Amino acid sequence: MEKLKDLLKLILMTIAQSTPVAKIEWDEEESQFVIQVAGIDQGRLVGKNGATISAINIMFWYAGLKRIQKTVGIRLLEPVTGHKGTAIPYMPKSKFDRERFGWCMDSIIEALVGDPNEWSMTGEDGMKHKVLIELAPETKDLTQDPDLTTALEVLTKTIGRSCGGSMDVTVTHE
Image 1 (cartoon, one colour):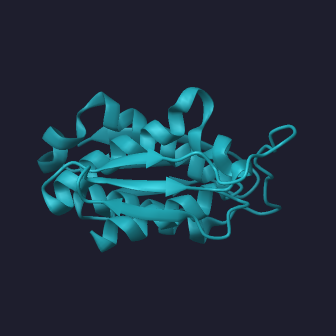
Image 2 (tube, one colour):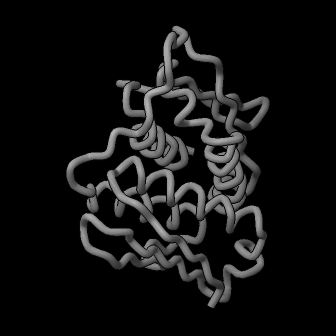
Image 3 (tube, helix red, strand yellow):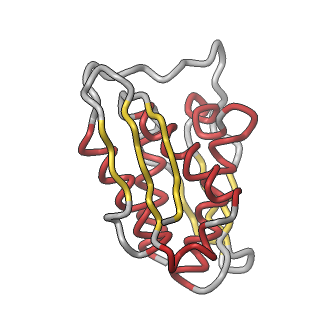
């Protein structure tokens, strides 16, 4: 359980730019992580039409099955303090944080399939990066679900933006 909590903390630290420490608690009865971020980061975590929080939820559902043999949910609480004013978009970093992006991707892929070496990225700083996630044949049953494929694409793009990059993502099943 601790590895999943650490992964969630890493994802939240990467996406939420104004939350010093996200609140993360485990609800054993509901088998879910209950999380809370600052009001200013709520929109970034939810994403357009709920795409980002949905992607995180789907990814943890599968990672829970892989790691602890039960599904794991994510419940996002309302922020403690509201955010008044206009939403603040991702503030691009002056340089793509390739190390942080790689750390996040390694952790996500490892949580899902056990091998962090199943993804690669090409592209130079200042241009669109191409990310290829090649999942092994033995993981096909787990990862062929279109919801998981979409979740991996959304989460990879969101983390890439948070690290100052722009991503084209392809998920394949070798």
